[in-house]
Image (tube, protein in one colour):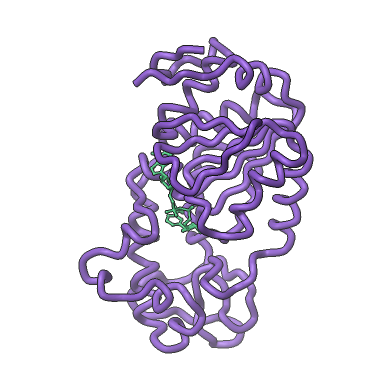
Length: 257
Ligand code: NAD
């Protein structure tokens, strides 16, 4: 695949003072991690997402919700970061300021080597007490729902469910980065979920050049300073880096700039 990177994108990236990045489920697609709806297959196909990922669904049937997250946790543990994750590690090392904001709960950015990831929707590898909201580092990951060693309540995945508020510190950092960045990447998100969907707009309105990386145009932002690089992130991101810094060409397909 040939990725055409416009020259204004290359020069904006090379000159960027602060690069902000928002990622969604698409950045992990090439690691084999299905998007939320794609994961609702087989036995799980008959469930409404709200029954598997909401406080009400957990209250009604904690065992079922636990089993569903356990399956996802095991699939994520088997997955490896892909060239898109690695390109973002490379990018972090090349720019003065870098803020990586993710809607993903799979922790693959950290496993790839990014140092500081703003997790808007939590992290499936952590669990917390469903009553005290305290993260519990050790737990028995079987089919039965483990309980909090302090209060005995059920443990739950440390992720944001439908109807829950996002962690305020993460959200404030994301908004601040979108306002401050002069180059902003939006990678592999369908923009269906607010407030993450507004971040590229905030960045564009604050003067950043925005680059959308997604094979699909559906739901993507458009505007004079918003560029769309169509294609899978695992090919487009290495190509973008190679266009800006030709020494980063290790995993790169052909680039036209
Ligand atoms: P989404 O599933 O709504 O959309 C995925 C987007 O990725 C689509 O726009 C699709 O066109 C694009 N895409 C598919 N393959 C791609 C590729 N190879 N490269 C680049 N883009 C690609 O995802 P979302 O916008 O992140 O919202 C879904 C919600 O579900 C989020 O809240 C997220 O937390 C959660 N989720 C997370 C994971 C994960 O942690 N990996 C997986 C599934 C869902």
